[in-house]
Length: 454
Image (cartoon, rainbow, N blue to C red):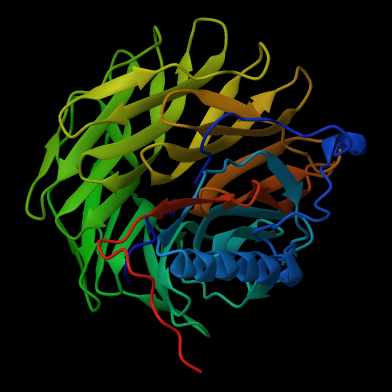
């Protein structure tokens, strides 16, 4: 599966913005912060074909004019940024608690999301697909009898996805992995380190036969990092280091090739600190990562566009509340970059998706004093900016994952509390204006205009 760099999540384990965040324009606000998607090219089926045809006709006309004038037209996008978020209807499989925890898109009309649904006290897997118009729940198997969770999905095509998580069948948690062929989800055998708990939290695929998954294993007293690779047939555990004598947990992985991956998470001994490591196809190596807070810093997600260009997000504790945490990797050093917070309550970032080094989108939640609300922000390569985002109902809302297929087309998923501790799936379409084409006319080496014969 040619990895969707825009994952993950991350996906995907799979973004973003691109210049200045403008927020909702005047006249676009609806009650409750909902944005109107009229006459906007939306990722989730809100586009208009006529505009696209008109745009292509104009570009074609300019090309012909340039040829007639003895020049060459080069069309390039002027740039765009996610500046609007709208809720898209999404189904629920149960009647009490449905949560989407990860989404992976390979195009604007092809996404897969996974999570959990609850039936009484039993937690089961949840999977759904997007065809550009409608989200549809698809059957997904369960291995255990009490708790099966899909925590992450990574797709390389509409018929090639891998999802991971964990299952419980009267025993401690064990790893869970399954593959999607476009029609059916199938469980594939995945190993465990020991007799204690083993959990997979994130997966990143660069092809149908090349995936890396990470998480944690419990050795009886502390948690340790867990990593494994998929060759299209077999999952195999690969050794992964631990930072200290305390607990270590890998929360996210992003691969740009089978031999180039970055994983992030946290380590906990006297204080919770960030954890980052790199994979060269043979060995995992810990690389130093900074901390911003005084007692708790966690990295929850990472997205890479090359082995030397990654963005990781999470949260830090300032002594009073959690704040957003963002850092960038240049192949040698992790550096913290300033990131905003929506209000004075707690702010968490759970997922990031990048399509370039200057185009990323991160999602999470913020606490308004009485409930959690969705949080969306974009990165233009220099500054992070908050984009207003809607919430479903008056209860808490959380965004757990985002996947971008272009600088102006992303999907974010999570869940909302409708009251009485009932959770429903939540999907947001994150869009920006169509990149405006710019034209540059260059003179050809031969100044003789071509002759047309009829």
